Image (cartoon, rainbow, N blue to C red):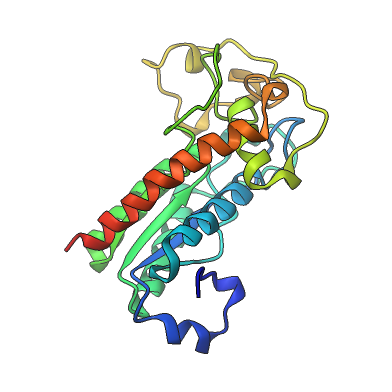
Length: 248
């Protein structure tokens, strides 16, 4: 098979491929507001689509597991519909997923994360998987940091329901993007103005970042920018997968 995705496999089909599979890809997203521009499942949809595109490049040496569709989103709870986990809940969830996968002989796991708020849980889970269970686990963001494409004049605050993330969504999962989009209504706060002061996940997105939930100006987002960013990231990530496989 050119691409292995758990949602498209039966267990005998997976069993027949296990000897070839070296890395499990686990997308990680969230269920949280993305302003007026994209839907609540934006992070999960981006992570899942990114993982499948990476699997198309890597072939049967990787397999894509179902996305973790909830995350750490306390800072978005002022907006109705957002769901958040506790840090320990998410750490335990990711750890359990990793241990389960490893029991089937896939000893290397790469979590592909599309929500910045998940960082603490991912880091803790990866440490526990390695230290407590001997599982070779890693996590990575899904890629806009690699290349910001043709975007110029970006505001200081980007990365959520902005031109960058919305461009990524237009390329990976256009179904989550609204055709009519609006810019963010930015809030001034010590937690976003000065990186010296850390607010963690407990700060309020609505009061400290954006009144309407969006950053930047999603009207500037394009499919072409999303493609440039994503493909540059995938090219790099394909090499990372090979490096993970080669590690003892």
